[in-house]
Amino acid sequence: MYNMGVEVVHIDVDKKDIHGKDIPAGVVQDPSKILSLFNDSTPMFVEFYATWCGHCVKLEPEWTKLIGLVKKEYKNKKLAIVSVESKVINKDIDRVLKQAHVGKVEGFPTIGLIHNNKWFVYNGNRNADSMLDFINEKLSGMKGGKRRKTKKRSVIRKGIGRKSIGRKSIRRKQSKKQRKY
Image (cartoon, rainbow, N blue to C red; front, side, top):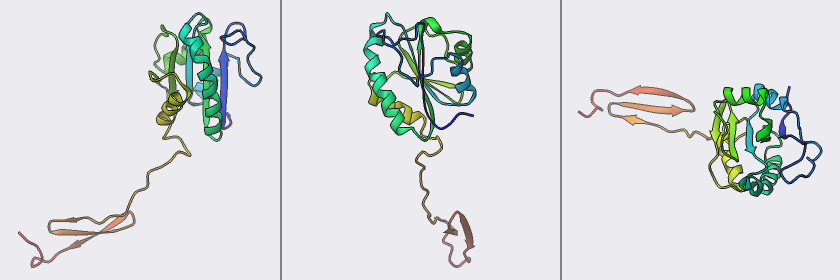
């Protein structure tokens, strides 16, 4: 069973990031991990990138900043931040893409959230704060999230009065003299 917290997954050909630097320790590099996270119903914020893509290179520092922000905010919730190089899309990753109805990844970077077997495309600003806002918006229903409080209220309708007691209401009938027609 998957523990609570943020899992960082980086899948590429040569075990290096987009700038040719080694992947930091603690970052999962096994492509089958994506399928296991998907099967475990872990929400995944995913980036599909290409090393030759200028937009992807420009996104990298913001993606790294996003990982730091997410680790602070989601330390008690399940979430994965996933980077997948275009050359590494294999059977396991393909299976996840099909089951989440992602479709074919054709443009880079392609960014989105896989949650409850659905793909939510991210088309916002490519900065860490905007991406975190998107994640928060889509995952606001997760356990531990803020819930709306309901208020007690009484309702009076023509001919019938209602008195509210907590979640139950008691219905009172009015006499014919009290009713106005």
